[in-house]
Image (cartoon, rainbow, N blue to C red; front, top):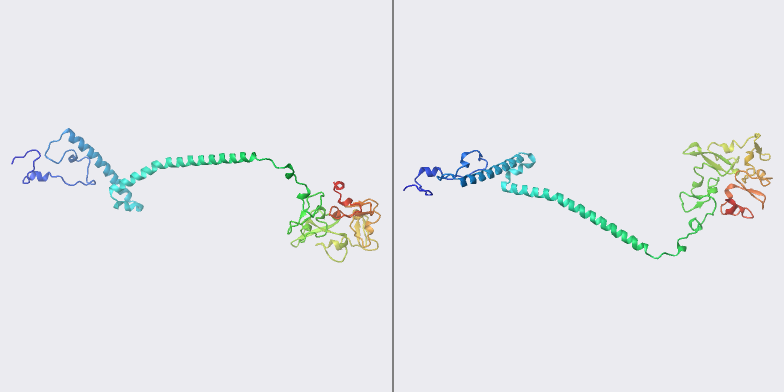
Length: 322
């Protein structure tokens, strides 16, 4: 039987050699001449050449993608890619590219929504403030507070803000009762760390066993030369107790107690029989206040302490003390 175009003869060995075989992408070569012609006995034409060129481009692209996959599989962390089919790898690449393209637009959209919500909240807050401003005003008497209502009940309206005890802040003592030689606070905090004493007698204090001249220990006159050492340096039993007094000092009667001239008429009795507080005649020292009613000096720490010491109450009069 003669060979016609499109016919098949099983006894013809030429036809058996030209049968179509399976093609592997790895074994493809873009430069091989068999990609440029069809594996049959039909002569090439212009349409067939164009089809072969399109197939060649697809095969080359697939070959490059598979080579890229094998290159990634050589990395230790991506060895699992060698078991992934090429089609699944292509789908994964497309999904990844889609996510990378959409992500910037999604982030920008979220930022714009955030700014919109913030501006909305601010506008609502402004509306609330405006609504409150339209409320009726309260009685002016409710806004006025007296000075007495803002001061602790156990202190008078005298100069200074008083001292609040460390362990009992609700207990406030007067300014002049701070560092006056007597502990008014339960914890004695009003006599600790004194830089200025309201008494005319003082000595260097001790902090953790170390005598310091930066802070003073305040003493009342009756603690001088009483046989008890009160000052850390013992000066209350040494400096004021001498057989001979200097020309700037006075002696308490026939005792060995010597006191300075400025300690006379200070309201603090230092002599046993009060010789240092006699014959003051309206002249007081050390911040003391002269009381005409009883003809004596009121010590500084008794001024504005909430107790009337002068018969006319002058020591507690705010107008007089200003």
